Image (cartoon, rainbow, N blue to C red):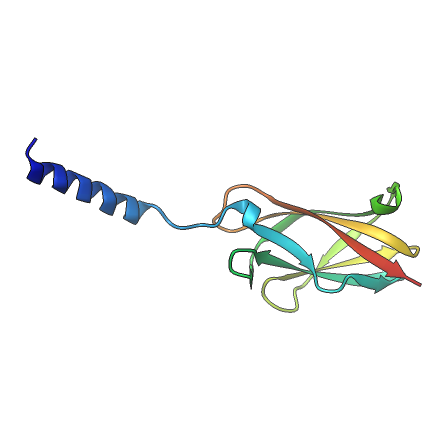
Length: 132
């Protein structure tokens, strides 16, 4: 193969890689963050979280949250769980959930989500403090 052909082949490989490869963040670069770390104990309380791309700091809209659980695991009472109901978002990149915080203490909100265009699952456990 001549030098000219080797150069053309290398250039073609680079162009092909550039056209087929898209830059995506790794799934570990995404995380849920609480917008408010505390709520009042009681029924029908709303918890809002934001899904963030840690590399850019920007909120990530249109993720599919497929798993949610709220229990008192941080206080050693993981059997004390309550129903979590998804609610409409107030702004892109935020995700809201309604739940009953039956007593004051630390509650763990466990979330699992798929981010559009990414492989893998974002999983986070966030601690919400319910106050009297």
